[in-house]
Length: 485
Image (cartoon, rainbow, N blue to C red; front, side):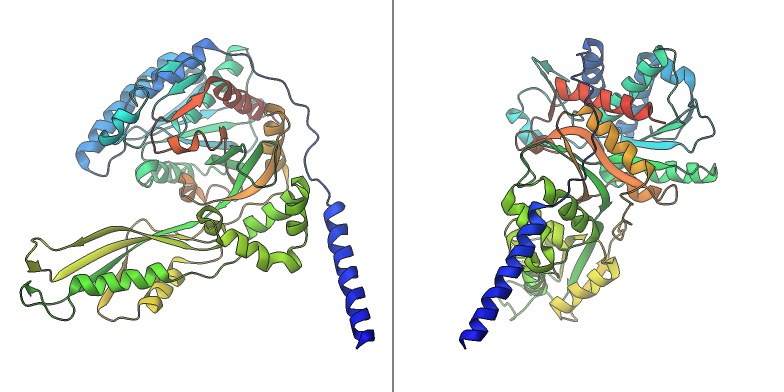
């Protein structure tokens, strides 16, 4: 027995030695790029972002809302043409009905594959019930000291304006971008991109355009958000989760509420929703998360470095930790939330029809079909009918984290942000990228926005805003990117 305990202790010590060795000697993969310094504040550029916010290009699903939004986008385009004359003079322009536009810029290497830069010009509504909580009206574009307020200041009008500012400055200086660049500005990302990004992608395909890489919104420069990393951390989305809204329908005989049956449509539906709510999908480490953990380990404090450098043995513990937070749980599992419920027309009438919609965000490596089947298996009730609603998509492909495109993006980030860490990541929400998969296999979801616990609540929320300094960094980032060969 003593000999066994001795050998067991030796084995444990050897194991710990290997684990500590992997932790101590984890190699940093960060680029050694010189930071170009803090950009100078540009008063005119600040005014331009403020003015663009004042065009209330709000996306609604109804036709009346679309007409109103498209009118605002038409006025925004006229403003852009006046505000950025060098861009519109030097670019070929395609306009699409509804307000989307595509600008094609020739670079000094005119035979190069273009880089395709995406942004959307529409914004979400500002709930009328929340207006009293806004510091300034959501479409005022108010400049308050060092901050610009309003819808689109973070999501996503600021990106389109930053690109135009950067390109305008390059052209005014008498130069051209190093390579061909395409701006694709969509009109309806907030309602799925069917009329904007989808049509733009079809146009590019008809023109036989293939992009060296595509960049869209998704992740940004996080501050105090990534556990164990004190430095600003630029997360570059190399994939995004899938999307499916599944409608559940139950039809049963109704009647007078004074003579209820044991079950009715509403109660059966409620039971089904409860079963789905309690169901947990398998927890996995998808490839984007694996890449984040393996590359991020060397940049983290020792506790996290120890865990993530030894995933071959610590993965169960890591899963347990990530399971305890809804944000980290979404990184390792398909998630679901009931978003719509409808049943009944009067308080004393038992409904004969009850419906609900459950929204699923599907983990990389899974499928819409598999998710639907798993939901059905969780309910196990033939009275409940399932229907996948229009607008679904499987998780995206995973873009490579090697090669020229990846290095070009990382270099521009390091040039723009001081002491930044760049890591691959997975986008939990959806973007317009899903429409462009035939245009390039190198699709990256990154915006040069500093995101922290103080400002992320403004995205689709109250007091959306951006610091002037960060807006200047956005412009500098795109200029650095456009000038890369």
